[in-house]
Image (cartoon, rainbow, N blue to C red; front, side):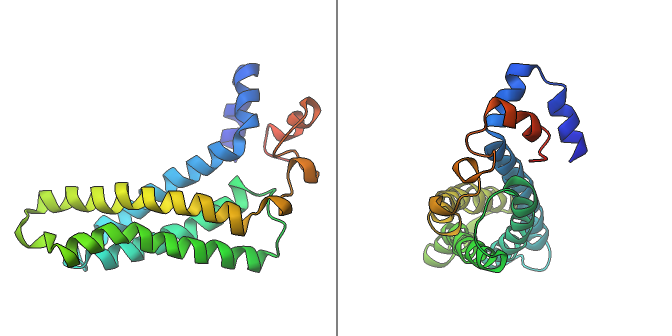
Length: 186
């Protein structure tokens, strides 16, 4: 991403070094923010049109599309120097873990709608707020905690890292290695 590379190159040296030491975390956060907006847009597009009475289905559909985008962005940008598994095996683990995450993200909405029958007596504005809080705040917190744990444990386990100790500059870059990595070309 030339724009980001140019932006990082213009930062003061101490800030640039700090960013480069945590570049995977920052990229993961940017991917997460991008897919959150994407997920939110699809969810509300569906709930205000064809799936108005089925917010759980809309949440699963939007989460599935966001997961596909997340894999592509994480694989090709945020974690391009990581892995260690065959690509198809890594993708399968990512999507299984993310699929469970999508279900966890939809669970608060399902409980509210199917156990407590929440949608029956609320205005549209109240439904929008409730759907956001349950599906995107609480649901995403559940999903993020699970995915962080599961991806580290199963999809990208420590013994299969390609960074730092395994020869890349991702985990513990030296001062010489940071020069190549500052622009994301390592």
